Length: 265
Image 1 (spheres, rainbow, N blue to C red):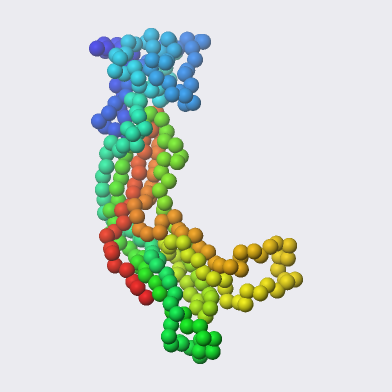
Image 2: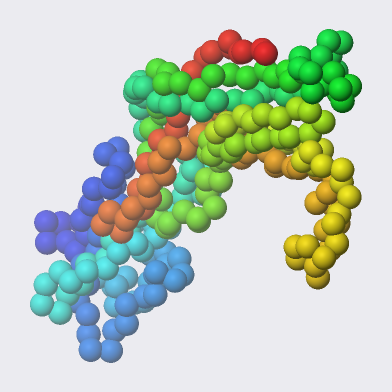
């Protein structure tokens, strides 16, 4: 066991149930600090001027160098953290829950059009086109929502692509064809497709961007599905930060309220 005059000491981490360790080494003029920011440097891979400062048990020799700082006159402290697997790095060491109000957007579940038997206006009587708009949706509103906070610890930063979960970005769809027009503002929705806007479909040459082919723009109006097509778990906040060389990440996720009611028109 290291003595009180040892160059070894334990170091607290953001996880109160885990610790790293530090080694204080005397540095000479020609001693170089390992490039631990670019490459993973384990204790066993450190240069001799660091390793000779203290004997480390085998159980700690696989720890990763995460920080370096001035300790005293011609001395430098090196901080080492437990090396994790990908599974360990992405497994929270602590989870907590809180409930608060959160807005959940309108969801367009289904949208379809039916040919009616009776015209609704004189204009439709003359054209012969009777279109009824039918839809099934879930109303957007403020709902009591559970938020889950997960806390992670790592000896190196997480990649930018760690969490690519969709977020509730809404879109407005609108249509106008064959005597039917309308819109569904600011909603989550699946893929939507409508015939071209009310017109004969015959192009008037000599008007507009003449050198650009119109092509399929005459065929239909398309609204690609929003990233989320219904309420689902999504990350509200994902905040990684470096604390004394240890990477700490706090992920807050919103869980959708249980509301199976929908509106059919």
